[in-house]
Amino acid sequence: DQQVKQNSPSLSVQEGRISILNCDYTNSMFDYFLWYKKYPAEGPTFLISISSIKDKNEDGRFTVFLNKSAKHLSLHIVPSQPGDSAVYFCAASAYQGGSEKLVFGKGTKLTVNP
Amino acid sequence: GAVVSQHPSWVICKSGTSVKIECRSLDFQATTMFWYRQFPKQSLMLMATSNEGSKATYEQGVEKDKFLINHASLTLSTLTVTSAHPEDSSFYICSGSGRRGGEQYFGPGTRLTVT
Image (cartoon, each protein chain N blue to C red):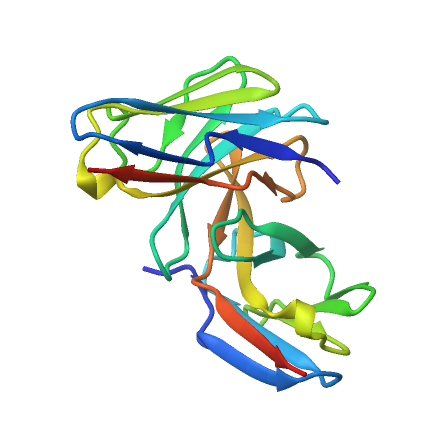
């Protein structure tokens, strides 16, 4: 059973426009949500996170929105740049068994066209 | 930002041999380290979680006798794949966390190929 879902395997946008990446989760125990960016054959790079007590967190061009009632979060990138092209993973965090665990979605490949 | 290194970045070994992968947090103390495995076009799958000085906690379906994890210090964790088989070929990624809050800092990954 997949606890974190990214239903869009890919997304293509034009440079300068907004990129919106979506993520859904099922476990109410998750209390932090994070977005990571990943290039092939590299480890993920942390982008932005949000606590479950907030509904929005902004950092430069990146904004994450959280809708707890819908168990949905999204990452907005404005304006999108060609360098943003990568796979974006949504992750949810819960404290279980004495340690913190991240559960990842399958990722969305973002392509920003010049 | 926090930096995590992994060594080696890629390794090829023969079936039946053992391979050790090192994960180091370079500029922070990682009280908890995580080991993930990623198959092509798939998500990162958590294999185990280790806290410094204690035994690792393995996820369901991960053989603890095959994937030996040692977290001897706040800056070093090792994963040893014992008696490797071709199906163990994968991309292994470690991460470290120094505090609660969800931020894990990932290493660059190790590509293991078992022939």
